[in-house]
Amino acid sequence: MKQFKIAMIGCGGVTTMHFDGYANHKDRIHITAACDLDPQRVKQAQEKYGFDQGFTSVEEMIEGAEWEVGVVCTPTTVRVPIVKTLAAAGKHMMVEKPFAETYENAVEMVEIAREAGVKLAVDQNFRFNFPYEHARQLVDEGLIGPVVSVHHQSLMFRQDQGWRTQTKRHAMSVMGVHWLDGIRWIVRAEPESIFSLTRSSPAIDCAGETEGITQILFKNGVIASYIESFTIPRRRAESIVVGEKGVLVLQHDGIAHYTKEDRN
Image (cartoon, rainbow, N blue to C red; front, side, top):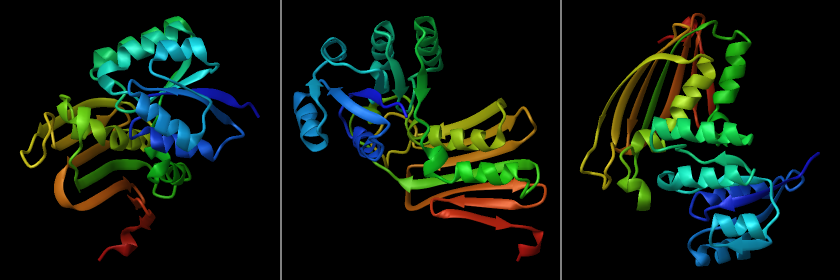
C-alpha cells in the first residue's frame, strides 16, 4: 500500500481534526511538513504531532520539504492564490470547505488544477460522519423503493469567531456544504432548480446569513428541502429520506427505518 507524503497548509482550528485523523492511518499517510503565517501555531502543531518541518509560507515549504499532496485549510478568502501556487508546483490538493468564496472562484480553481494536471478534491467528510453513506447503500438495496423526497433540518446556536464571521456567506457556507452534499449523495442526481431564502439575525455576530430555507428539484424528479438556523438553543440535525415503500430517518447516532405500518 502506497504511503502518501502530505503537507498541511494552515495550522488553525480545523487542522486538528486532520492531524488526529491521519494519525490513525500512518501506513497510508505521512505528514512531512506544515505551514502557517503564525510561526507559533506551526511550533505548537509540530510539538503535538511530531511532523518533520515547519514553515511560514507555502513557497518556503515547496522549496524546503518533500511532499506530494497539500491539505489546504486556509480561509476561503485566500484560497485561489494558494491553489495557483500549489498547482504550479505540481502538487495535488485536498481542500477544506467551503471550497470557494464564489462560484466563479470555484470554476477558476478547477480550471487551474486541470491545466496543471494535478488532482483537486474537496473534503466532504459528512458523507461518513453523518450516516449518508449508509443510507445511500440502503436506498441502493431497495429498502424504501425509489426516493421521492429528502428533507433536512439543522438547528443550533452557533457563534463563530474570526474570519468566518466577516464573509458574505455564513450558515449556508459553514453547514450547508455538508447537508446539501449529503442530500445530493443520496439522490444521485444533479439539481435542476434551486430556490433559497436567507436572513441574518442580530443574535449572532456575523456579516452573513444565520437562517436559510432551501428547496431543490433534482433532474431525476426528487424534491428536497433544507432548513438551517444558527440561532436556536436546542440542537437538532435530522435528514428524512422518503421512498415509495418506506422512510429513513437519519441522525448523528444512526438510522431508523419506517413503513406505512409504523404510522401512529
